[in-house]
Image 1 (tube, rainbow, N blue to C red):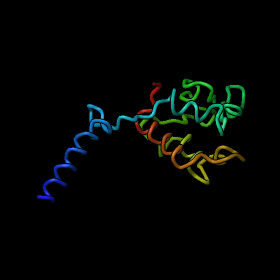
Image 2 (cartoon, rainbow, N blue to C red):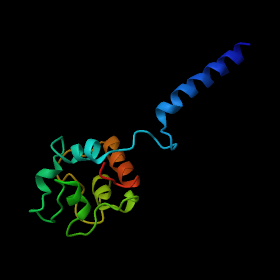
Image 3 (tube, rainbow, N blue to C red):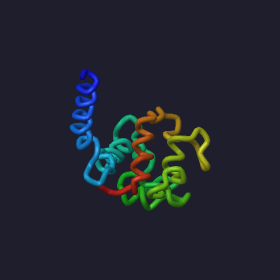
Image 4 (cartoon, rainbow, N blue to C red):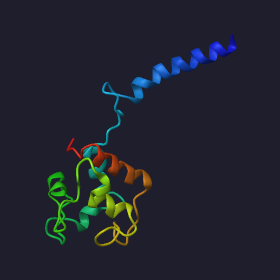
Length: 130
């Protein structure tokens, strides 16, 4: 009888938490947003990538706007929507020796694994401007 009560309680908890953790499509409800998640990371926070990466600075990667980021740099496309592993932005923040140049932020505090995962998720989920 006790075992049945525990199982029932577990099912009730699962039924209550499932809608909170998932949206109607079955995808995680916490899809990263450029405006609220990615832009602040690149902006005026701990890393301030936008200080160095404007349209006026080499390699002409403009991180001040979504369109600038998606336009890419002298090195080509930096965000391949749906493919973080092949996106230069992700490679530059996650790899000690990225395919081109140095790990970012150059000479600065590295992003945490949580922040890197957030950018990875955003890219893998389409890198949308929402």
